[in-house]
Image (cartoon, rainbow, N blue to C red; front, side):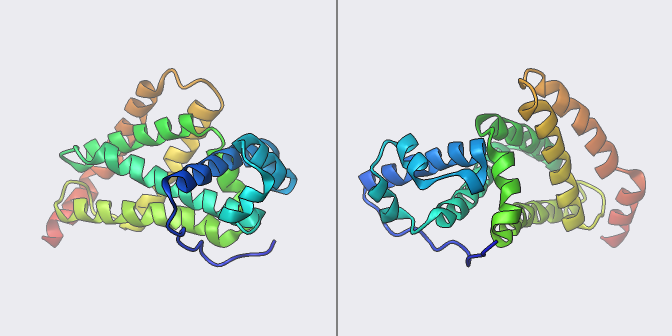
Length: 212
């Protein structure tokens, strides 16, 4: 598929303009999630948004542009939701617990998240990579700081960031997307026991201590 450069920053909008743009992105999230990028139409997006067809082109030049903006925006909103939930945690393990739960809650509110992000690999591989790399960059920094404080064992922080993201991704699909998320606390408890036993492995902790 054709690729585009990273999404340009949105131009400054009036309050009304920002609201209309948000309506278009919300409608696009529904349409792309339901019928896929290939079958989605601008007319259906504007119909769902409750705006005229021509209004779309004030904010986005074409369908690909609204799709890439949507993926970027979902990633940005997810990172903000995670940051808000973990900021009160006092140590890395508390942050992990809060982060897993925050991701599950976000996925439950955005059921089309998985479909849209996975479509991005075939629509625009750059925006697909950017979605995950942006999440991983913040995660890697947090894990690195925790390792420096010897809160967790000494690992390659980027490897661990992607490993933990993978765990969250699969659990979210199984326990949030495939069925009603009624038992998320149990799921979080189970994964945290697994994470604690891995991140706090005695061999890795000893290695971390030896570096200090």
